Image 1 (tube, helix red, strand yellow):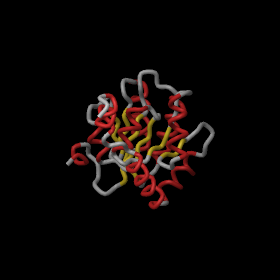
Image 2 (cartoon, rainbow, N blue to C red):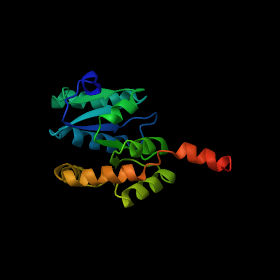
Image 3 (cartoon, rainbow, N blue to C red):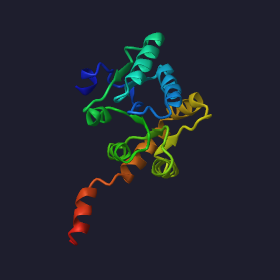
Image 4 (cartoon, helix red, strand yellow):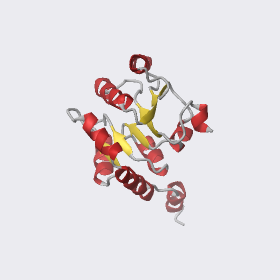
Length: 182
């Protein structure tokens, strides 16, 4: 039902791409990665540009140029992230705490883009070391990385399993117990 509501095809790999944000940090790198995903004929993509109208416009222009409007949906801010994660096979995002936590809880492998130096870079390193994420850095061969990822279903499945194992499903309860000394 969710796939249908977003005009997506059941059974086709779905990628959830978080590309915007207020500042559009790393927007050139983000757009290069976005283009590589759009060019992949074996997936469908939901791209969220956030509160960044210029990013949304760039995304939509490229989708139109490539004739991919049937397999790429571009959204601004949405409150449907949980539903979109439930139909996705992969998340592309900066490694902030909330999106990372939601991705792990949903058992989704992550492609990391544009971490902010400090905590986000530490998150990226941790997720990559634990083999739940692939970090695409500036200068990397994006097409090769994506080809390797999508041509090996076992690799993505193993990443999904590790993501589920890393998820802390009862973390709120556990924190409350610690705080209440129970």
